[in-house]
Image (tube, rainbow, N blue to C red; front, side, top):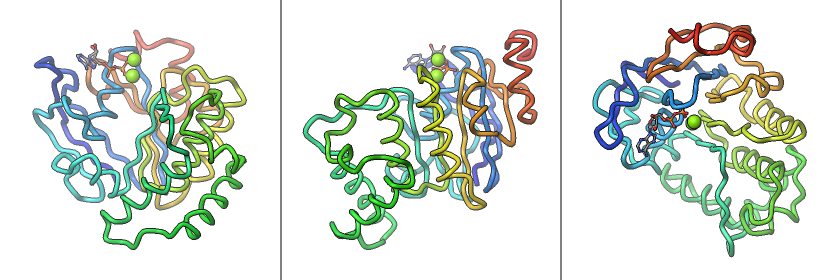
Length: 247
Ligand code: ADP
Ligand code: MG
Ligand code: MG
């Protein structure tokens, strides 16, 4: 589903990713762990197509298509979902408006008919129920006044409605209490743990992995993957720290 080969990039002329290779098959959940400043967020932004993250070499393909030559909205329409640590607040735009516009713009980009208001509400109710989100919350402006847990639940509903092929979640677990972690974990397991879906979880800590069991764990250090293992590697990293393992 995702094939990254020898990817290099720079920000403001400074090399950040230095030959990163990673393959993710459909049905797999991968975790990337690593020290601060290693390039984890840079990888997520680069795959999402954020301006300023200039690719200088290597390839990144999703389902065989060259991700790097697609505009950010085309990557989203192709099934790539990015979740970040700090969800944005959008005063004046309700969650339902935002979600419907996001979904329909992706559908238009795929030459699929946009959902009518009625069809969309039916879908939103179904996903909200699946994730334990009160529909009334979805009528409120995006993330305004939401608690950390509520923002994460809203993000999981967003993921459920957009139904991506590949979700990349960058430190989406940072600063969350146990209840919010469980929401994120259940959301990922419910929406994305499927044979035709895949997840890349970027995290600094192992605790999210108590709720979402990864098939593979990678260490990212100094712009490349330096080690790959199974779920047990996350526990080892927690015990030993990155210093000895990253080298
Ligand atoms: P991580 O997510 O692993 O903590 P980042 O990808 O955020 O690491 O950062 C990797 C490196 O890139 C760091 O040295 C950081 O200072 C640098 N960096 C990240 N974003 C920018 C930016 N917008 N401008 C300049 N340097 C940046
Ligand atoms: Mg960081
Ligand atoms: Mg980061």
